[in-house]
Length: 83
Image 1 (cartoon, rainbow, N blue to C red):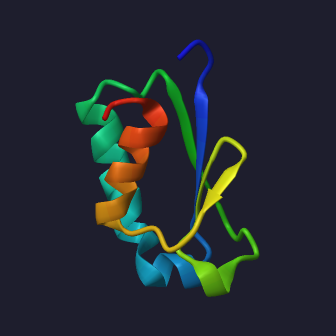
Image 2: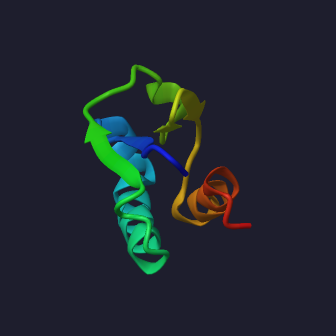
């Protein structure tokens, strides 16, 4: 990974109440345990406008719907090449 991978988690009330609060913790733990904090720009935003399909996570330009703490780890493994 030459440049940082941008990961944006929706922290709007709908996504947060549907589980992105737990996904947020899972992602932070994952990045720390895999020594990826320096390779990833991880941040939140208030709303992506996709509330009905949430929780939402964006990696680069790709939008992922219905993210939960379990499938977010699989997703990160695939995207970050740790499978």
